[in-house]
Length: 370
Ligand SMILES: NC(=O)c1ccc[n+]([C@@H]2O[C@H](COP(=O)([O-])OP(=O)(O)OC[C@H]3O[C@@H](n4cnc5c(N)ncnc54)[C@H](O)[C@@H]3O)[C@@H](O)[C@H]2O)c1
Ligand SMILES: [Zn+2]
Image 1 (cartoon, helix red, strand yellow):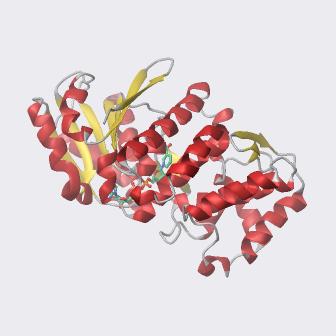
Image 2 (cartoon, protein in one colour; image 1 turned 60 degrees about the vertical axis):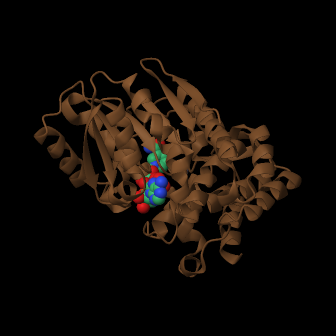
Image 3 (cartoon, protein in one colour; image 1 turned 90 degrees about the vertical axis):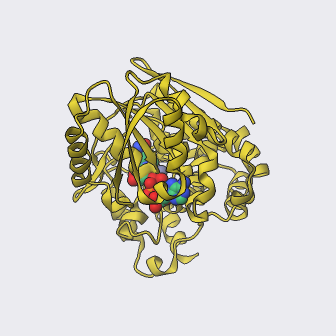
């Protein structure tokens, strides 16, 4: 099965995303081509060590790349400044120098932390992403946003820092829980909805059972997702314009995550899945999306068994004004107006703050009675 390679051409630095099946066994060769010196620091966690790390290490050994592994604890709660300190202390104790390279070997949490550490250690060292969740392969490893959470909110300290290489190996996803796969799939369907109707039709045909999809189709889906995201990022590296499209479903979703206190009972991808349906419904009520297309979207979400309704436990605690006020507190809200990403049709998003408040209320109210 052939690897797919995507070049992300940015102004100051371009890099490759290589997507394939079992490419981890060839990682040493691919990495050696882009590093300044054959010395890397791999940051990962115990779960990944158990499942996959040995394959990476033996490939590095074969390519005569010296390595040191740094383990951090698993989970979103570890995405904080203490973990940044722990990693940078270990790097400095090990006398890291500017020509060494960091490798993030894990999901989005690890990628975000390591990208941040790489941008501040010795004022910046190179880093490579080896994303191991579907979400990280299609979303967090592309675009160069790094960072950690603070008590003030998620991702509030961070940088824009691009990796020098991304290796996405779909064989690593075999050990991923189905719920994590679906959470990643939400971001995939997002790219289709906002900018690629052809991709939507392809997914509609090929992605009915996410845990049974063939490796070659997974590679294709990761590739097309990264291509779409990279296209948007290229136009808007520092997130001032069209990058907002990537927020499709997120303004609703973030509010749900926040109201659930970011507990694992609703994952980000799950909140976004509900949020995208709310945004689609809003697009319909506002007269942009046809009822036929709205049905198509709803059917797809149901067929792929994405989360489509707010779990009862959370729903019981919510009301329309509570959700609306939480949406207003989103960091992306400017001048008290909620910018919504809506769909003109499948494959065509736009941003607006001109919509009927009553429609917004209806969308929220209906999400609570489903
Ligand atoms: N930088 C960005 O642009 C961007 C975009 C989207 C999301 N994010 C961030 O990404 C994070 C979420 O990432 P995530 O969903 O990958 O979560 P995660 O990194 O917490 O991974 C989810 C779980 O899967 C485990 N895991 C990872 N790979 C595995 C594998 N191959 N087999 C078995 N288990 C595996 C992890 O250890 C973890 O327990 C959030 O912090 C979010 O803010 C960043
Ligand atoms: Zn997201």
